[in-house]
Each structure stands twice: as structure tokens, then as C-alpha cells.
View 1 (spheres, one colour):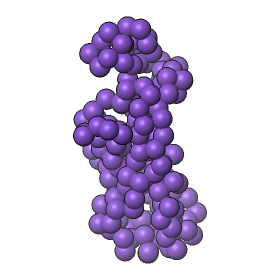
View 2: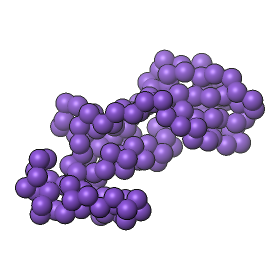
View 3: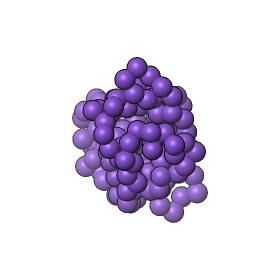
View 4: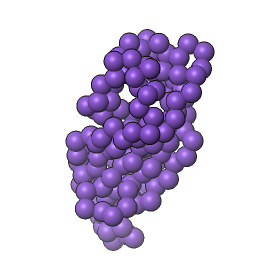
Length: 150
């Protein structure tokens, strides 16, 4: 994990890739729990038998499930010391180039794209790439915006 001593050290890292998380397996249980939480029970996600006969040959994770996992990857890839809090401010761009089949292993990589001043701290844009083990295309590429309050 990359650790920054201060918000200024973090800002000085604009343009740098921070590395990757460990691989994690995306399970059917996680997909089902996400379906329950969001009321999105489309068969390509939750009906294992029907999905096996569908266009992907297996159930796939919701794109928004893949996107939401970024929150958990943050603390596994980098940390900025001395913050009062970090706030998810939104997204600039999100794409899902490749579906994640249930049982696949995924990992996240993070690159600091931009840091700007805001009242009380900084606004950071981090480009996240969620890779699928053995697949040429990523599952998700997203520019997340966070407010970092010192």
C-alpha cells in the first residue's frame, strides 16, 4: 500500500500509478446480495442456469457492483495521513468494457489524475481500472472524484 504523509505529498504524486490491490474472487453470493440491495434481479446476474445458456455463458456481476467495489479497494492501495475525512464527490466518467463472470478474479489499479484546491482541502480525481484475471479488457474504468478535508 502507498502511504502519503500529508495531503501535499499526495498532491505531489499527480500522474503516478499507485499500484494494484490483491486479486479477489467475485462470488455468486456477493452478486445476489447486491441484487437484493438494489432490487436488480435480472436473470443474467442471479439465475445461474439461465445465465449459463445466455450470451456470456455464466452469470455476470452488475456493472454497478464492480464500480462500488472501488470504495473498498481505496484503503488497500493508498492512504493519505492527516485527513479529517474523505468524501466521495462523484464520477467524471465510467465505462464497463468487459463483463465480470461470476467466479472470476478481479483487482483494482489506481492512478492520480488531478488534484485541485477546494475550501478546507483538496479535490482529487483518481482513475480506477478494474482488471479481470485472464481477460484482455478491463471490467471497469472510472474516474472517481473525492474531496479530501485536512
